[in-house]
Image (cartoon, rainbow, N blue to C red; front, side, top):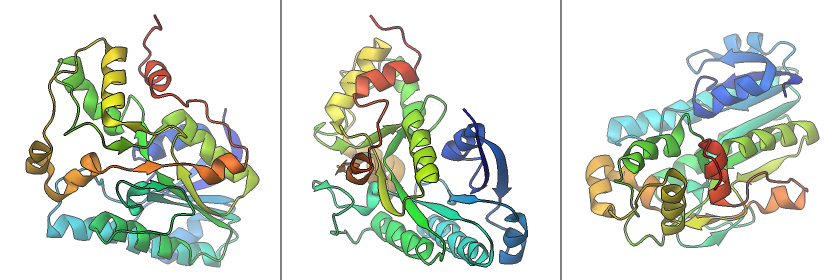
Length: 280
């Protein structure tokens, strides 16, 4: 159901941004190549700004592309915050990712441990720029967002439908996921309640790669017997393969404390509904 908020979105034509445009009835699209003055003028009468700026992360990284990943997030957010601080905007939601947390550790929003890899540094600097906003601000740390029309799940469908889906490495790595419907509900929840601070946008039930792989194979009624060695992913994606091979066991403690109710808590139920598969 569309809400009567005037929303401005940077990254409106991306994976998550497209769904947000369908969620709200009055959306202003901001472009990351606009300057502070141009952004400011477009923010007239805007109540909420959502920042989804950034070049696609799942792509082979080299020095030039890492520079693009950084600048498209940090520099865009800096301009955006400068414009918001001059405006009458009431609430700002920026984006980050659970890549800010260390591997192989159970984490929630209270966890302060960080790694020093590129992805964690990118998220940390991105959040620092967002928190310079003088208006009430929240940051959503995205887990693996699941939807049929894009993101990780969309990329998995072809190999799985061909019977080529399989566990990655030893299958023990943890995947912290969120169904797109629940992510949209989180945006609505935060906008209605105007809560500030950091929120992990993940289901309360992260799963191992083996569990995820078996669930997807079961839902698609396809075998999952061919494993994917991690070195193959490194050959394809280089350093960016960490996005697919890192183990992140992350929990949405703050959302649960605030009474947010997830529609999807079990991975198989989410996949059945997302893929439009009949339940047996």
